[in-house]
Amino acid sequence: MEIVILNQKEYHKQYYEDHREEILKNTKQYRKNNLGKRNEYQKQWCKDNPKKMKNTDLKGRYGLTYEDWLEMWEIQDGKCAVCGESFTKPSDGCVDHWLF
Image 1 (spheres, rainbow, N blue to C red):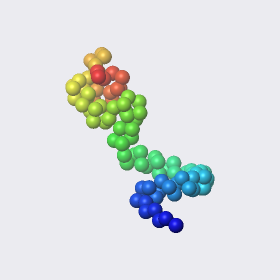
Image 2: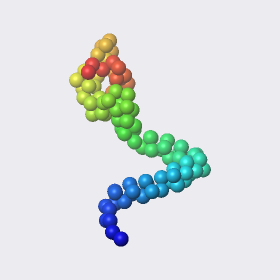
Image 3: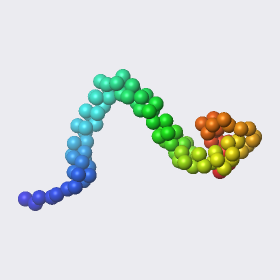
Image 4: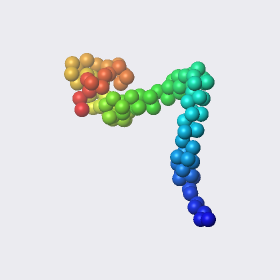
């Protein structure tokens, strides 16, 4: 019998592969049983992490990071590149109106 030593990451990957169906079944059941609890947790996390939420949204929609977005705000002096209207804060500006 050969003993194989795995690091923690490899161990968890192998464990998941060996127990995938059971893990998925348990996860699905947990989510079903704790829907209200999960929703409250997610709402609170979103409130506590607005920058991460914004970064995820920008990355998914436009391929931009939050820092890229703020840089565009500064370059355009807080104004719309299309119509020249001033935004009071970066979150008021629509990315579609930023000049890339």
